[in-house]
Length: 292
Image 1 (tube, rainbow, N blue to C red):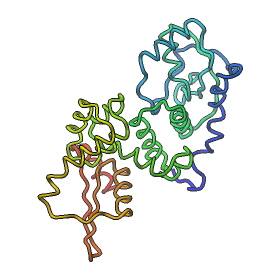
Image 2 (image 1 turned 180 degrees about the horizontal axis):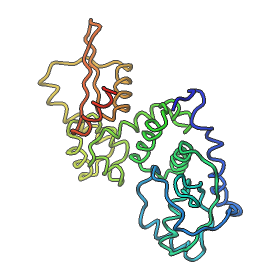
Image 3 (image 1 turned 30 degrees about the horizontal axis):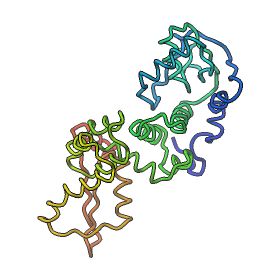
Image 4 (image 1 turned 45 degrees about the vertical axis):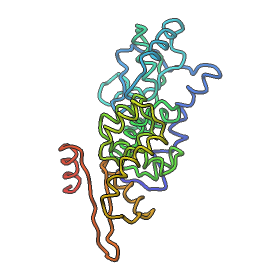
């Protein structure tokens, strides 16, 4: 989907979030009036919802509250794109899940018209603004928007009120091994820990050590330097890469979700670009990108 860079995401952050923000304001004032109440079985979650983890304890608490007082804030939905007479959740999947646990037969809804692009944008923006996504989910959400709807890092940064480096650094987390991303997703590692491990060839081993010892981010960075020191002594000294080269490496790594190294030969117009893949699936992805 082509789009003017100046336009940002969809029809604008304020327009997209207008309906969602009503539910936030409802916490301090009167509840938002639902358009209607419908059978819970005709309301479906959004398959592109970036949030994948729902804390069981939080859901239990919410289900208990809903069982006693009902759903105060209605779900924001749109007409289901493929099931006539049914609905797809735009905002409120956590309430929908808790309502099922509380054995509610109906849920209150507010029906709005959103395109596929806007549904994903609202879901990501709402979750990020309310700090409900873990770093891996957030990075996957960014990647979804960029891949599915041709968004740039600059557009993402502008619409979400984040810096471009914040977007790029989060996307780099996707290049980590799956077991390290799992530690990051469940809170055993912070984003700071994970970023310190990105350039390591033994990220899984180091991450396990960081978790076992309860190391801080600063201690993790020192551990990384210590692990690299013996190699540095045996090899020829390397010139420090300039800021532009490092930024280019970061951008390429984020775009490919693989570790990329750019080595420009001093006094020459050429150099070497190295792309590291962790498995054959990633190699297949790279081949498809290079041949498409």
